[in-house]
Image (cartoon, rainbow, N blue to C red; front, side, top):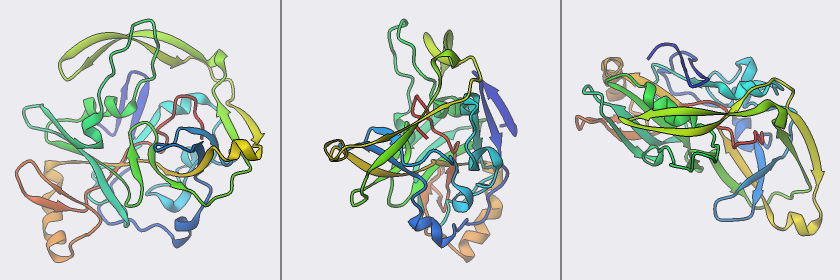
Length: 288
C-alpha cells in the first residue's frame, strides 16, 4: 500500500520500517499516564481519563515521539490521523500477536484473532455510527500484504478500545473527560463497499475544528466503588509484503524472537511479527 492512503476521511500514514525488536524504557512498565477509568465490569466501559494534559505514549511505543501523538491536540479532526509501521517484522519486546489479516495474491482476505471479529455492523439507516478505522485499513491491504495487530502480553486486545488491562488496586478519586463539541459533529450517508458487499449507512463525521472540551470530575466514595482503573495502550500494527520476508529468514534462524509467532498461509512459521495501527483507536467521544 502507498506510504499515505486516504479513505472515507481517514489518512493512514506509514511511520517507517520496524525491522528490529523495539524495547521500551523500564519506566514504561510502571507509568500511570495511560490510565483510564471504566465501569467495574468484566469488560470495562471506559468513562474517563485519569489525566487530560497529555494524550501520547512517548518513548513507550515505536516512533512514539511524533508530535501529534505525544501531546494533547485540541483539533478533533486528528481522530482521522492513523498510523502504521512498514515494512514491519517484529512486535516490541514483551508484546504478543493478537490478530492477523492476510490479503492473498488472489485478493481474498483471511483473518484470525481479534481481526476475525472486524465486520461492518448492519444498523438501521437512521442510526449514525462511527467508522472503525481498522475495517478501513483492511480494505487498503494490497495482494500479498499482511497486517498483524499486537498488544502487551498481559493486555486484552479490543478493536474499539485498543489494548487494556484492569488495575484493581489503584485508588480512584477523580477523572477528566475530553469531548468533541456537538457543533463539530455531523452525519453523512455513505455507500459502504467491503469484501464485495455493498450497503448504505449513516456515518458520524467531524465537520468543525472547535477545540475539544475538557471537564474534570471528583468522585464520591460510592461512585468510586463502581469504577476501576484501566491501563491502556494503542494497538500496534506492522504491515509487511511477502517480498519483505526473505531478509528476516536468516536473522530469525540466527536469533529467534520470542515476542510472537504466527503461521503464514504457506505453513512456514515466522516469529516476532507485530503491528501498529493508530495510537488513537477512539472510543466514540474521544475519552483520551
